[in-house]
Image: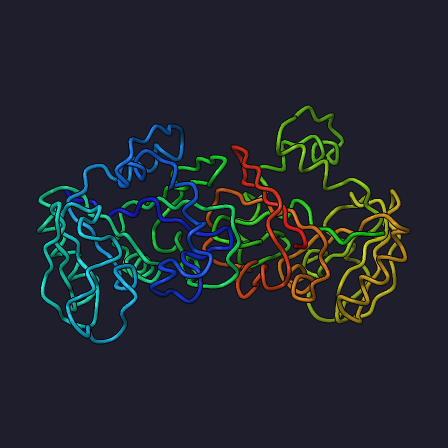
Amino acid sequence: MSKLRVNCFSISLDGYGAGPSQSLQAPLGIGGEQLHNWFFPTATFQKMLGKEGVATGTDSEFAKRGMENLGAWILGRNMFGPVRGEWPDDSWKGWWGDEPPYHCDVFVLTHHARKPIAMQGGTTFHFVTEGVEAALEKAKAAAKGRDIRVGGGVSTLRQYLQAKLIDEMHIAVSPVLLGSGEHLWSGIDLPKLGYERKEYVPSDAAAHYVFGRR
Amino acid sequence: MSKLRVNCFSISLDGYGAGPSQSLQAPLGIGGEQLHNWFFPTATFQKMLGKEGVATGTDSEFAKRGMENLGAWILGRNMFGPVRGEWPDDSWKGWWGDEPPYHCDVFVLTHHARKPIAMQGGTTFHFVTEGVEAALEKAKAAAKGRDIRVGGGVSTLRQYLQAKLIDEMHIAVSPVLLGSGEHLWSGIDLPKLGYERKEYVPSDAAAHYVFGRR
């Protein structure tokens, strides 16, 4: 059975999943990049850059778990790019260059239809206009029994949490302050939605929490 | 110079400083007691119970720091007790019995005047109706150069933060979910208020953060 997972989703210690004012120059919003300081040295990320990663330990372990047994991804549109409203043309193909690090089908939530884009390395971006449940159905079909990972951003996560569709969620709280931006917890009552905290594993770079159904 | 400090203030991983529905039976709100699981085994707390504490380590270190060099405390009224509105009589003298653990002057913020109460062991509760700045002035005079600690709750902390009056703040994030209650960070933009994160020290029981002025 496919699980719907969140992994390695980084938030600030005051609860923001991205900084304010996302743009082409600041894909993670102002100050948002430091949320991922724990992730950059991990072998998983270094390998994405084509480098041989050697880091071990808690952070690397969580990064590795995040990539295991994935058959499809779901991304909010803002995570796919800075374009808002109608797609002006087909030129924007994500933040990740010709060979994105997904290597499977990726379903992008949007209000504006667009044809699928096949990228190098096995990633195909599909655009879903019918909402989070439809995206999950399509992702399940594509994943063929493997898990589906919700990549973000905050608003996409919040929608899946509120719909009680997430099976497992790993959040990395970075010891940084953002002060404003998109808040993950605001108005999200996890116990009421049926979730509990399963793991708490602090490292020197982040406090890792894993949540699951009670 | 007296510093205005917050120490050992516990919040849940989703940002709540107390559970919902505070009452005489549940001083910390429903589920709020587990916020302090890191604090209960510390030597500092065990000594308050009259026991010889032996715990050492990160949690005990933070608990100890919290009690050093204090000359006065400031508490919000809800931290002093469950009574709301006018004081019906003088019978309520705090949650802590005849000998509260403060051993100095304690200034309680309230909208309803009341005469000071001298308790055993050197604690005197004073009731301040003129707001957070007046309470701080009175506490400074009482502290005679030592520091003043804001005990809480969340709404009192938020008022002092918004007034930029806190000099140093230690927050302990417990690995528990509350889901609702009083949120510490909501609408509080610490970087904008001039604060930064100075320390991040995780233990197995809590993630400790210390904030100070930039």
